[in-house]
Image (cartoon, rainbow, N blue to C red; front, side):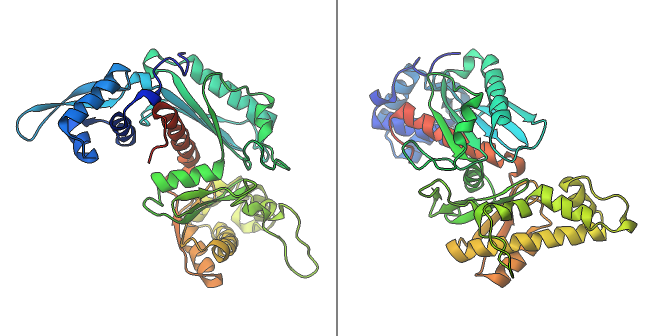
Length: 388
């Protein structure tokens, strides 16, 4: 595989060439007239910019299209020399990997199911990430170009160098995994990544402020405020698994207890314990429970409704603090469309007005979000400045 330093540095590009490259990376293929019109560049400036980019292989000519006046116009897209990125969702149940170009054309993908669910980031996830990244690099093709960046979404909070690292588990990633040399590594919390994806591609497009709430094996929240991802001083913004719980009678809150109560495993224990004898065998897992609710099982519907009401209470707590206006529900349980109406009803009864939507990206949300973040980082390196 080519190294990240095989092509020229973006520091030598003119401002117009950087603008053209950023736009191509954002929108995909386009003609010179289309790019010039979008950027307000003259024909001579566009010609000079494209010549710069073609010379170092950052753009490729991929065909022609018929123009309005009968002339054909050359079609361009991000070139091979711009390279590719690897995005990994190191989840609690699956490892999802995508290799894509700088303009997000998919080159390779794979989903690996972990042998057992992992509540914490540890050696098993680390080893699986190592295997999946190595396998992707082993099948790399020459027309992928150099690896520009690698991004990994983690099921834990993420802190930067020099920040408070008390109680973080992100270093467990490196117990079995060694990042490839020559390309920057970007780490981000998995729920934050899902929020990014819903903002760019999914249920919260063109929405500057919203919360993404994930409910599955674990629970978590990603917050987008005025178009910016909120991480917090300790990388813990949105860690709703640490809300104080329980608060009743003689009960006293315990760290992480609400996540243990709301997680899929605890949900299924409650379902099995309360399953009526006349309804046959209890559901095997949450997918079975949701399927039975859809098919009309009264016991399954009651269990799902109760869980939706519990989620609604958590959403109401979040609304009371950040007032996002919109909440997107995702995760293996939360992303089922049956839950959103009940969650919205409870949240609005307990707190301020909020619209609850169901994720449109499903299980791909996290890997698409880390892909977006790692592409942005690669672009920064290629053109010497952050994309607007």
